[in-house]
Image 1 (cartoon, rainbow, N blue to C red):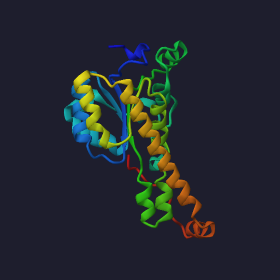
Image 2: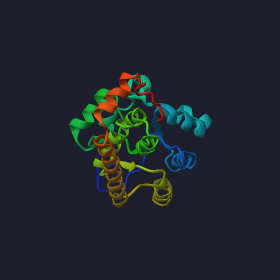
Image 3: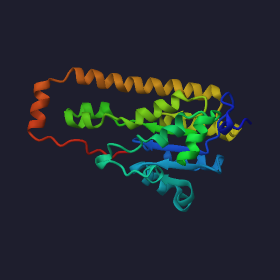
Length: 232
């Protein structure tokens, strides 16, 4: 097996460091423990509600396997959960090339970690739109989730991008059988991640184009509350 941490982008990837930050927590109860089983070195970085759920799932194993993103970055979450993962150390770990000496030096200099797997699903913008509440829809425009997912998908040569609970079983089965995720699978996962983020952005663009500026201005003039989601 090629050691992906030293290059070997064409080979398999075994997840040793993972970021899990999901709105839909369905399936985490099977994904997290089995991921830990097939990858004994696994350390998970997580945020907010996901961190709490993963801690519950891991139980006594959480102390050695689970780290809050804010503890890793040294930066607390912005009030309301608006900024959690938009941090240079996070993106260095996702996008960095493990066989690039300059990138390796940056990781060592900042005490960052190579990220091998990113599991993200997005705030439910479509559901918020159906509620008819413009502010709820606006505040459920996910920024950090699509950014991390796109970064992981871009670096599919080295990272496993997981964009839906529907993909958990397939990823786990391949890890169980082979101990790694193939380039073929990572490429398919990357394609799906970009499809999901494209559809997500298209839904947002369509909705914003249909909003009446005067109606929106009136909504906030009446004191609509802003950005209070903490779903991930």
